[in-house]
Image (cartoon, rainbow, N blue to C red; front, side, top):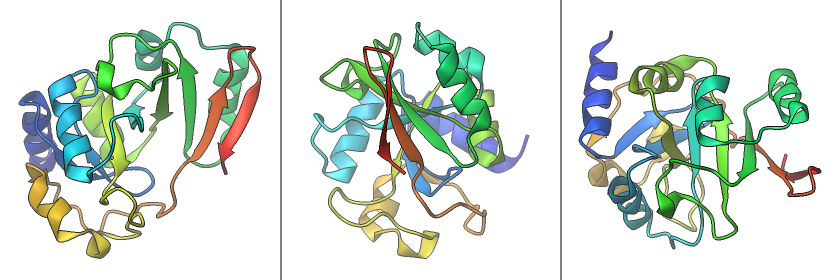
Length: 186
C-alpha cells in the first residue's frame, strides 16, 4: 500500500476531508456514511445542503449494499458505459442523511481504476466525490486551477498532482421511479 493511500485512509477514518484525483476531475472527498464529514464538505464548498453530492463506490457489490433496487438495465448500462457515468438511484440506505437528496435519491458512480478505485476498495465504504471548487465557480480542469481556499480547507491533499484525470465531469443518468432512464448531463 502506498503512502498516499495510507494517509488518505487515515483521514477518511477520522472523518476528515480529502482532496484527491478521481476518475474524472479533482474531487473533495470524505466518508459518505458520516454526516459530520459530509457537513464539512458543504461548508468548505459554501454549498447549500439541499444540493446533493455524488459518492463513489469501487464495485457492484458495494453499490448493492447502499442501493436496494438496481434494475438489470442499469447494470447493463454500467458495464457498457464508455466513460465515467453517475447514476441517480432511488431509496438509498446506510448513507449519511445529509448526502441524500430531498427526493430520497443518491447519485453514485462506480469507479473501476486509478487511485480513487484503490482508495474506495481499501476503505470498504463509499466516499463523497464533489468537484474541488467553491459552489458556483467552475470546476477545476487541473490541479493548478484549484482555489487556495479549497487547498487550505481539506485535511489532506493527495500528492498525485500529475495523476491523469478525464478533466470532464461524469455523465449523469437518473433512474426514475417508473423505471425509465433520463439523461441529466452528457
